[in-house]
Amino acid sequence: MSAVTIQAGKFGNLFLSDTSSWNNVRNGTTATIVNNQPTGANDNAVRHSFLSGGKGSEWSLYRSYWAFNVTAYSSATISNLEVEFDPSNLTDTNFPVAIIKSTAQGNANTNLVAGDWDSLDFSTLYGGSSTTYWPDTNNISTLSLNSTAISAFTTGYLKLAIVWYYDYTNTEPLSTGFAAARQNMSYTPRINFDAVTGYSNDVIGVSSANISEINDVATANISQVIGV
Image 1 (tube, one colour):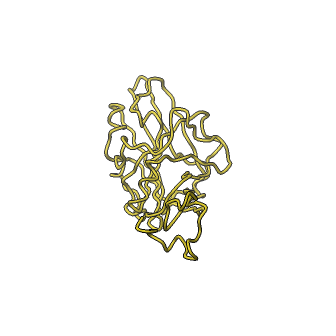
Image 2: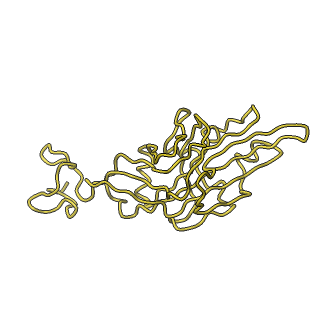
């Protein structure tokens, strides 16, 4: 088993606002602001806002998109998958996030475009919850990803959309104001995980994680043992 870290091939964020309805933002198709590989120390990673007054109302959201090339591990056994990033202490306290499947950024080698606003799958949750809060600290931090995210490794690419949790649940904000999860973008987001390559089954009751060779042959070079 080896510990692996992979930096995002592409990362960035998109912003959309609308003065007609929450639905036009949450289920919109075209962002109004596009940021690729930003470098700001306290940039918006995720944000929501709702403003209302004499001139009407406005809803807006920021979403982040991070893409990773994991082709070298598409056949490996993956565990302990997490995403690592550098948040900012200017983040609003208790800002909940969800991490869901993204379909943007090609093979982790294509910049975001305005039309990628809806290049995500709200039905595929990779991590987060109503109590998974973006850290309000200046320290390097991690968030765990689930087995559904691990299953994406078989495609060769892990592509994430990080959103406000209530964007994920499609819960319209009722109180005015805004809150944000902020990030030091000069620290490229990355994923960490443990990987077992080659033969990954137990042998005579010994876990594959504790086996490096079978009869002097490295497990990385073994696909089957006695037909298994």
